[in-house]
Image (tube, rainbow, N blue to C red; front, side):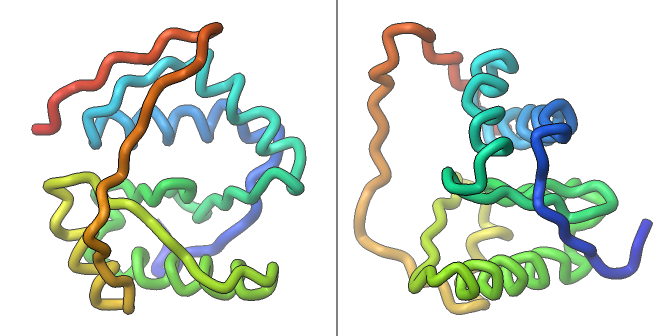
Length: 142
């Protein structure tokens, strides 16, 4: 296990590893997960940087929504990851970062507030509109 994170942009060849991390995150947050649907959405992103970017933290972590395996939490990796993302976004001309935190994930919320993110009095709403895929069922968060 490394003492400090190293970063690299995810590539199309990383899709299966990326899907493994997505499944772990969705399970942690209680979201439904369908690997084939996730693959269909992820492949274009990893194959075309005009659609966005996704990074790996080398040595066992995933960056998209933010996910660190438990053994890496509490070691400063979250702060370093967010600093890296801020720098990368700034280089791309991004002027603001926004993120969501699943209700009950108080550690993540405290981290984001400590590094300057502010809560807004709004609600994040979703509506599943796809007709070619059915929505994976959500699972209750432990």
